[in-house]
Length: 388
Image (cartoon, rainbow, N blue to C red):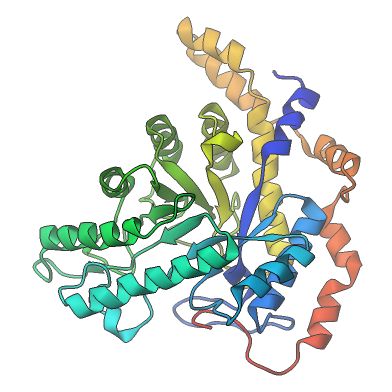
């Protein structure tokens, strides 16, 4: 097995973007719960995100969601974030909440609705220009519930045309990342249901278009690490949305349901060079904290990714390669298992302390008094949440 100290040195390349919406209220189809201390503005969301980075050193960027995080002055918002020690990252579009998008957005049969959706993405790129953000992330709720409801092929044609117009507006240093989801809210077919569809569209668009992989957006039993390996091999993996699922798109804390799967994914991330800066693969959380406190939930999440990355770095790739070459099935599997079951937590605590971070970020947050402070201060106004 790889030396622990050598493995942990690889963690300096790890950075995980956190989503602004994770700090707002969220819930299920049945109820959105309010909690004390929930941000009312995007500035308060960024302040909470800055706490995660301060205590973990892992979350230097905060992703925005438009229009949920819309402000008058994005240059000022960028400066505000910088003063708190973080930057503004991916800009996420929203074409799933307006009434006009009931039957689709970029795929809609009505050119006026498509025009509205395209113009919304232009607005998002204006935000990117002001904030210096690199990635425009597109997730579409577009699809149908019943066979015959829509022309599947025609919808793909309209999607390709809409994406091409958006892509043409990108700046030289900007990218379009196209997310996929195999069902929900559409149930018969989703217009971008899988990595192959996203890959086909981004391949047609060009080098500045990449695939976004959400770990919760697959059918049960899908080998996600294979998809990671393939997209990295093809040079088309642009970003991750990390979360965890038991049944569907549960949006739970990453690693909660299957930490071994997260370990296997992170092994392929490392194997494919995705932690190398030149490959520009963005690792991001996309979760909702419905029951647990939001800031500790985000801290727990980035720590889970860090721990599974550390374990994946422990895999002895030389020994693994030899076992694979000689057909040593059990030996090769044992190399994986030994790395996964290594308790790396004490070494991680020392690694954090050596970098001026608390050994236990969750305990440090609990002792900081920050939660009580925001609970006391954030009284009145409208709490941020889905649609706000």
